[in-house]
Image (cartoon, rainbow, N blue to C red; front, top):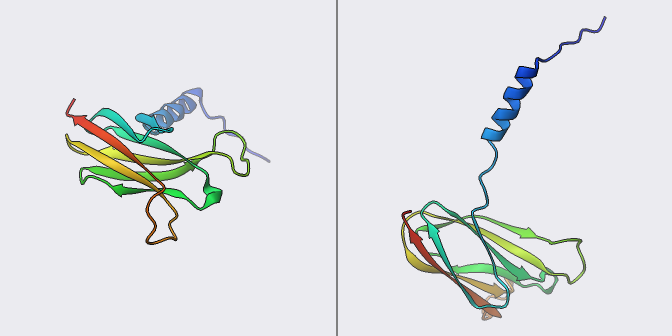
Length: 134
């Protein structure tokens, strides 16, 4: 004989509330870089700053951080493909940074071919950060 247990509705409700409490925090400030060579951002200590830089990965080029102030932590790097994947299509390299202390500094991103050691960057982008306590 098969025994069935019915979970009370209250238990399901508690599980859903617990799931909401552990949901990831919001993305914070998202900065999408286009053709510009610099961007300014005003943020608060503890904010998550998400920077999206355009790249065509089939070319062998990718973005790297060449200057990161000591009070800015890189907490993630990923790749974002808007829409359907197309050969030669545009993608975005996404950098996530957390700001630890009030600063007025900049982060420098460089577009390079990682396997070319002595090559100068094809492009650089400067993100000027002004970070306040609140």
